[in-house]
Image (cartoon, rainbow, N blue to C red):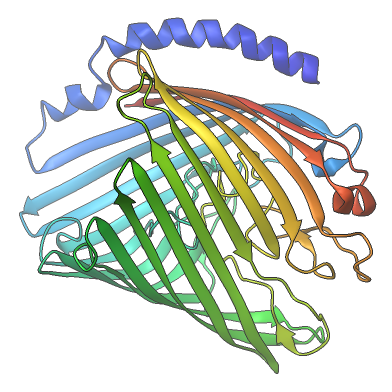
Length: 435
């Protein structure tokens, strides 16, 4: 399978690059259509294709795959008045040579967005958006649209925005949409997500402070005793991002979770610390950075205290390694990298990860939140492993972008004791075209 992966990858690269250069010189279909439509009617779209594969799936021997992902989006915007807009977008996500075809790989022709907006949540002083929509906050560590996934995430509900003196506050009352291939997507009744997210860009020089509070309600969740109960969780947090002299930049985020799951109490937290430096006066504008991420685990699975951080609705991609094998739960991640801007719109980065469990008796969780491995006694240790990633992105002419990369995971003691401990390899190549 890997030989097939490599051969197909190399052959398709040449064909796609040649086709992309020709397509970049032509007007996009939406441009041609919009020229003939009234100004208050706009159409748009995007096509993305990615070839990817892996070996060492679930860190086991003989577990490999290679497949094409294809995603098409078509959108319609109606804005008859400056303060009123209707937006709808459909999405077709398909997985070729991958079975079964399930989300997040496949979800054929479903409604991605459909909302009415009064005011303008992006520009005006007041804005209200009601309907199906994406949510993005900060670096998407806690709430994001999962854009790397073929079938992305959306929410049903309302979002209100207030602006004053250069500041912004978002108010949410939503429910996450459950992607199901072959039927119309819908949210789960009673699975509600509310919040307030603020953005203050002037409280600290050269920095933005973003305090927030999220509230999650979810029915029918099992607590530590195995009983089905209702989740009622509150999460206050703050994110600070800014720049310093001499090309330095920093990023800090902390969040704390409390509440209840039936008779269980919730006590969990997340921390993110990053420092980087960019040399803009040097060739390729090199940047080095280092970060530490800590997502708490459960030190005692039978004490009635839920200590595992709930990752909520994050964009997992490239937060704890580019191969996206682990979730932000019971995990400590030391991460560093080097990146630069090369000629002709090419960017490249080299990244490293070193993972450890926050609690030796809690599990290691996959990017989808399932358990990869667990040592009930804690004797398997806490060192999960290491990852090295090489990532490139290329901005071609016009509406075309391309990218390619590879991620390699070398298992540590924990994975070797709880799985077969095989190395994981993830190569990919991707093209995106704005229709």
